[in-house]
Image (cartoon, rainbow, N blue to C red):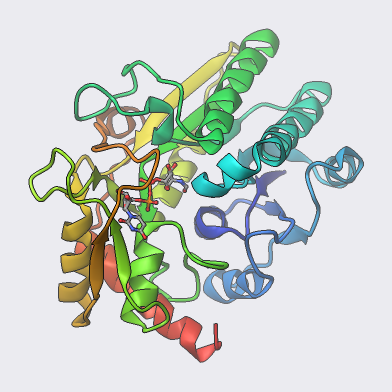
Length: 340
Ligand code: WQD
């Protein structure tokens, strides 16, 4: 029996594969390497001493996916595979809808015909848009996300709810806030391909001298220091939440539809300047920056109420911002050795 992890060589996917292997699960990875690199597979093996099965397949090709389901007894899926660059999604909407939704639908077709349950979906706090009050809990009304990327996440959730209800299957929607950090081994981390759009990889590359200066997109927001606030959560804590969510689904004997929804955040908000200062303090480096115009589509504030995951999964994020940012710098030093 195995767990299918799509996008399993990606940032959060690879950290989750490590936690699954460390918890004794068999893992089958499908990853088209559009946003990852093959050396991540070797590093997973080095960290865990185990060798997950890997298929370099594009999930949009249904016939390849069928081959994987024919070859392995899949008992659950964690679906990370998706394009995730918010800005790019505005320029290539059809590619984002095709990739993010067709991949999901192809897996669900296999789940439907083979009577498989236990599906965990990588969702995002972006489905809340700019919530009216903080902290954000799972009952907070959803708003239409500004970005096509965010819309694919919200549509993915709706597709999965309909699938679970129609076929009495068990699903878990995990809404990440802002994932940051790297594995303690420094062998896994966020692999920025091209110019990073997310804050922490850009801070990392600025400190390393790869980027000249960090552009801070606006300091005229309605926050204490004028820069937007987010809930930055350590990637290994997010990975552990996936194992806890999977265990809950697999242990549910009800035979009824199960639709779990959890916010994965720390419950603490940090501004852009908080992150810059924490990175400098944690790693004794400088991060030169300049204040620029706001980035279109950015919201002012978002941080989680993560009590539901603690109550129902026995999970809570336990890593501080500074600790997470220290792992980022170790990861950059590892990448330097690989001339990345
Ligand atoms: C955080 C803050 C920027 C870069 C998005 C998605 C979310 C998830 C994470 C995929 C904002 C500021 C950033 C920079 C800056 N998606 N910033 N200079 O936009 O909160 O969330 O990425 O995993 O679903 O919505 O994350 O890291 O891009 O930005 O000033 O060079 O940092 O304005 O306030 P975001 P982010």
